Length: 326
Ligand SMILES: [Zn+2]
Image (cartoon, rainbow, N blue to C red):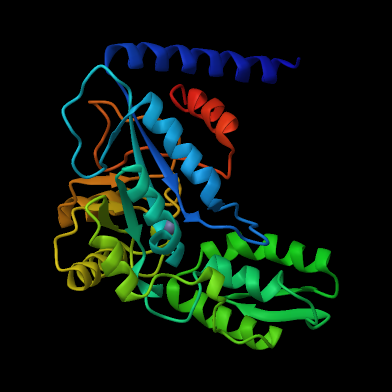
């Protein structure tokens, strides 16, 4: 083992030790993050959990933990607590996840990015997948302006296109909504596929959002309008993107929205202005997307969450064990 590896290992051991002490001092709450409950032919971002696995996962949670609501935590007791959340607002949240949550009696909070709701477009990361990775017959080369730069590469084979997709994903994530949209429209024209989304990847319609919100098991939270990486926007643009999503949601569902989750939600995806915007808008609780648990002393504007993948029951239980010590 190299010195560097040893140092990393020692750090991990210390971190887990500290987590154990924190967990003994104050019963932690673990907030889980889901995106989709459905079955997909390809899922390069690994966002979908199959309905079978989702039901099995909820049963593991019910058996071992108290299940709380993100927006209205109950009084703490001796059990460890878990919270279920969803990001983005895919149609399957209403069509496939909701019936399972209701049958199992598990509450969940859905953070909805409003710009794609009720449109025929896909979220931008899915659109990128559809235009580059799905099917064949693409042009042999791509050479398009991308903001102030260009993307130029071979696209003749599936491997070429995968390489372009892997290059483009982080570059598009760093763009503001206007430049991103202009690029996606040019990419759609280049691919000959148009901008209309796949039924399997659509966001909720407004009616579906309303029927999701009508369930007593559901809380609706905001998640920006454009799903842009907030740290790439000016403070005023951040405030606007967050405020617009809340206003649209409140108009659609007819009740106040008091919780929010940062798009992407990593520590580099937000900055001081993001946190200030949430405080100014008065959100009671804000979810991030880095691993960890929620304690009494956790900043309510930066609540860690652990990402759930398409794990069968045994693997899910194993991953949960690790989450308490993240
Ligand atoms: Zn999101």
